[in-house]
Length: 104
Image 1 (tube, rainbow, N blue to C red):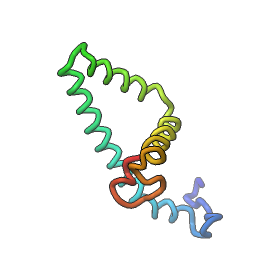
Image 2 (image 1 turned 120 degrees about the horizontal axis):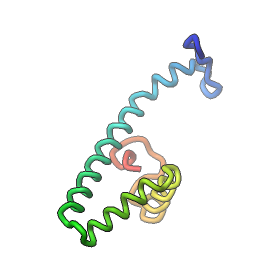
Image 3 (image 1 turned 90 degrees about the vertical axis):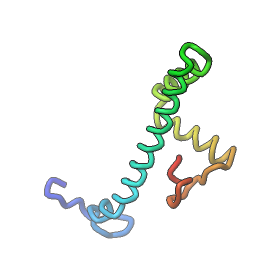
Image 4 (image 1 turned 135 degrees about the vertical axis):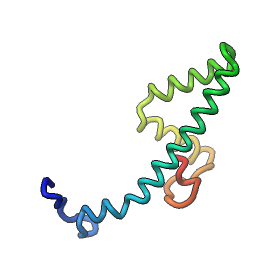
């Protein structure tokens, strides 16, 4: 690994470095989409909370923010998948193409 040779993949028998390079576009797409979604949701929630200072919406936004920061990411992800994919059926469970696949 120190020489840049990560070996061969057990799954595809291709160089691991090539496997990593092949997945970079998917990683960048997911990173940009998550940044945009988080920015829009955060700014919207912050503006609503600021316009409703010390009212119900402000307290609800604060509660959601504290819950979001306090929960481990893997646990929150599982809960979101259970609610929005399995129970409500709004998003695909396992898909990598299209906007609905980027949400969760």
